[in-house]
Length: 249
Image (cartoon, one colour):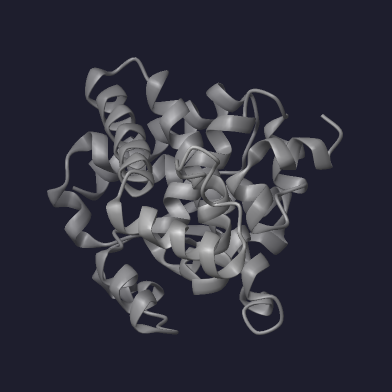
């Protein structure tokens, strides 16, 4: 099975470089549960829950794969490899985004923005690569991931509790979260929600908002320039047009 895994990893690596027109150095592949300690650095209950579900992780110069990944489909494994190669690509071009521990105590909001950005970049790169793989199973896996992330954001925007939260922000804090017609301004609601409640640090919101940002800027800014000049605030992450204005696009 390790031979199969290596062959799939080699396929994902070649696909990654071809689609992005880059020459990323190939990380070493480590397979097996003897490497599980790489998945288990717990800073909180949230990180524990995330790591308990992790099947792959990029760390240093290697990609570590848990044995349970062999029970997944080929499409799932290829997507995972592409995602982790995305992290390697981000680290090569801007190490401070991948190594954000220094921000957790001094600037947690920016740390959360960087975390969302790097996960969004890795997911979006994987989705794009899957779409050009030429294999139906892999193409469909990328499409399912894109649809899932977009549908979760749409559900959040239309959630009754979120609308009630927007009303509270408008009535008690003077925020522009409800427009003159009584409709929710979801961007302002998200900015206030993530800033006040620190919810951007939650794993699912990081992936969702990272995806939202990437799909709205990736066709306008070179991927390397984007990684080297990431969004710096929750507003820039939630409102990509604000980010584009900040870089004089």
